[in-house]
Amino acid sequence: MCDRASGLRTIRHEQLRGVFQRNAQIAEALWRETLIDAAIFRQAITNNGSRTATKRMAHLFCELFYRARQAGLTEGEALTLPLNQFQLGEFLGLALVTVNRAVRSLRATASVDFRNGRLIIANWDKLADIAEFDPSYLNV
Image 1 (cartoon, helix red, strand yellow):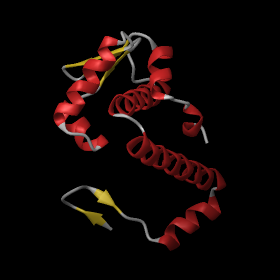
Image 2 (cartoon, helix red, strand yellow; image 1 turned 180 degrees about the vertical axis):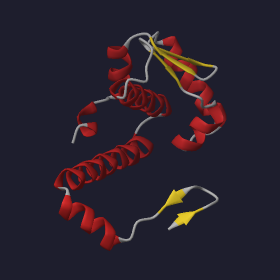
Image 3 (cartoon, one colour; image 1 turned 30 degrees about the vertical axis):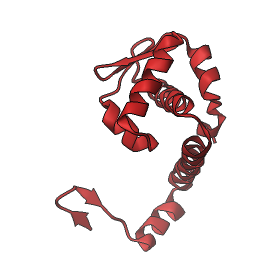
Image 4 (cartoon, helix red, strand yellow; image 1 turned 90 degrees about the horizontal axis):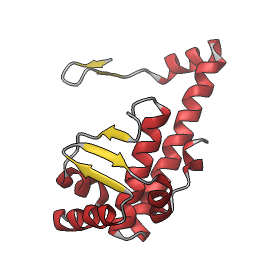
């Protein structure tokens, strides 16, 4: 079934089970992606529930950069990140002024810079330390 407005397609469970029975590699790949999605969701809950605004922002920057690097989407220590501070606030559950302060705080550590849709990692180890970032949850 196709939703013409979004271009999204749905697959009935019976059809998906048939694909899995014919090709175990596809079943394993989808299962792995499901495990990774669940791990990311758990981290998001932890991030938004128990970290300061600066740590939340640092963790988000770490995760986005780490995942982009794994996918070959970074340019050295830079990543095109077409988000503005309002959107970051929406994602992290932070007010715009708090996002602005968190970004300024991270800039002051000389670990990262985020301007005009571009994320530059100046010191990965320092940023990961601030964020308490352990990427093992992304490699389930």
